[in-house]
Length: 479
Image (tube, rainbow, N blue to C red; front, side, top):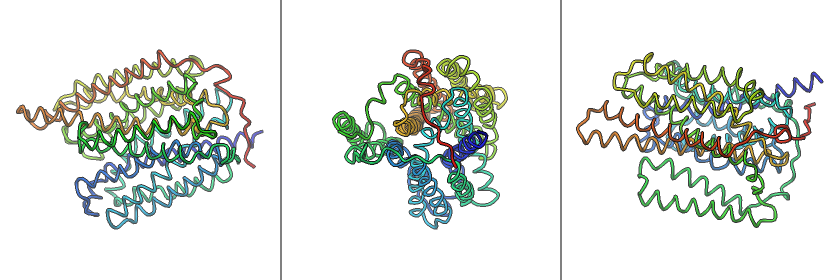
């Protein structure tokens, strides 16, 4: 029995390390962009593709990868994704021109999608007892939050002390160790076989629709919401996704059986997550920009200033969230966390051009710790209604809404902030005041998105029944 327990917790460590690595890679690159632009001669417009080339395949392939994990085996999908991501990190660090780096970033996004899509599916099959599952999800959420929060600090240190390629090379030893441990710790699973759901047309429709949609979103800041480019590609993306939905309703072996959406908790948690992360991820990006562009903080200073939020989220998700969920239920915990996040964003709508850190920024940094309640509760609710055979699909769907939520949040709030800043500059405001006005508007919209998630949690979600919270899933011990 002890070997089985040790194997499961080792497997959790492997899954969490991969979550840390992929989330870290999404944020660590932000502070290294000026150095990369100088060395590889990126144009100002081309620089955004360092992020976009990673985000588009990551968000676009998650749903397909999650279903393929159910069909060919989640362990095999996880190992393949880890291998691709690690190899692509070597290529990214060794890139000698802009095109090579963009290609490597695209491959990193593919690898991240393959591995991340099945992580929660593996986790819920390993931990079937409610208290243990809550603890496992809390630990996994902690590492993801830590990766998002410390990425900017680590990126600043590596870029300043070594050089920008090391923000990619750091993934190599983590990926290699994770692969070695995964071979032994993760349970072998055969999957249902491709014949159980090899919907090639559905796969093409959903992958192209998601990737085109995310591409359209990340280019909004360049073209604007009402431009022909945005409206045309957005309409095509919606048409492809509509075709996918129609295909799933009629296909004999659908890629995404629509039965998964019959669970109120699966549907509600994914909707609440998209709204919540639109606001939370925008906080991470926009607060960093405000501190650097308005208050004059350096990259490392900005990362250190955001540490209280990282520590708070990590501490609550690791030591508090699971206990509260076991006692009060994940829905109640989610609602409580959203209240704290809304309060944080409302406080940020009052920042000024000369805001003090302790008086103006530290209070919302502490309140943002509510994310340590929100993220694990959403993961628990999002997986609570999934049957064993659909666990990989539910995991892929959950990760898809996560990535789409972050992309939409950054695109919408950045565009609104830039538009407000432009209006204020045209009206004669100084640059710092105009930038501050734009960010304040964005923080207000973020509060609105979190309020919408709060309404969804109140009206759609319900406490998981015992059968949903711990489905009868056979746990396979690694040999």
